[in-house]
Amino acid sequence: MLIVRGIMWISVLIVMLICMVKTKRNGMKKKIRALIFVVFLFILFVFMPYSTEAPIENLFITFKTPEQAIHYINAPFSNDKIEDIIVGQDTCMAVFESGQDEELYAGRDMWLRKGEKGYKLISADGVQKAILSNDIRDEDLDIFFYVDYIKGTKDTYFTGTCETMGKLTLEDNAGTHFTVRLMDSSFLGTDQKRYYCYGCVKDMQDDYQITVNGKTYTAENIKKSPEFP
Image 1 (cartoon, rainbow, N blue to C red):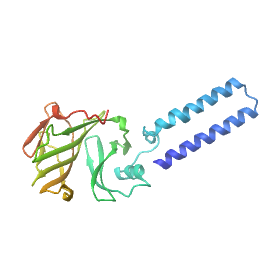
Image 2: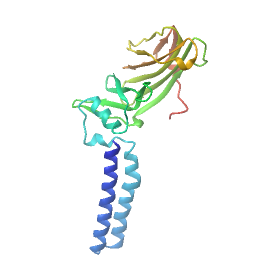
Image 3: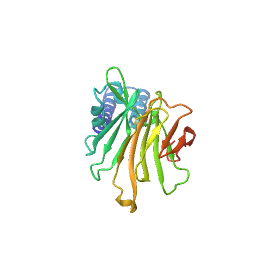
Image 4: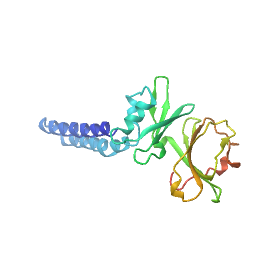
């Protein structure tokens, strides 16, 4: 992705310099030259920076598989491997294993929209972010989930960690399949275990409930995180 964006920046800059030289040689009026200069400045300093946040590749690229899109976003700087693809109704998202410490994490900028011909990228602006965590941390259960609502769809992704003593059970009233993976818990220094969990709720309703080790949390418990707009 960075390579494509870099080529775009350099191309715009080269075209801008060529046009400015030609307009001066052709004796074009200063007002017109100034207008062209302003247009190029707008492209260079307004449109191009915005393009780093917006998936402008959607205008000319359709990825046949999620893996192609994810490799395009990650390459060539990440050694992390795709551990899983969470599939929703209209979208999907990647879960990675870090190449450094083998920890799992969700690619929070790796959302893809499914279409008839393939997959398109989704910008960060296309996702509403929230969190679900314990109001009061207790000794037997510590929850921290990122909750990502994909705008324009009914897909909601839960990704995060649960720390508890012994086995972890996770279910909701929407019939969601949650993947639960036992992670390295040695850093906790106790008998407490750390799990990485993820799943996609394909149609979250107002009466939504998620139950973790017998403790139930509702849609009202999903609070806006101060870290995210």
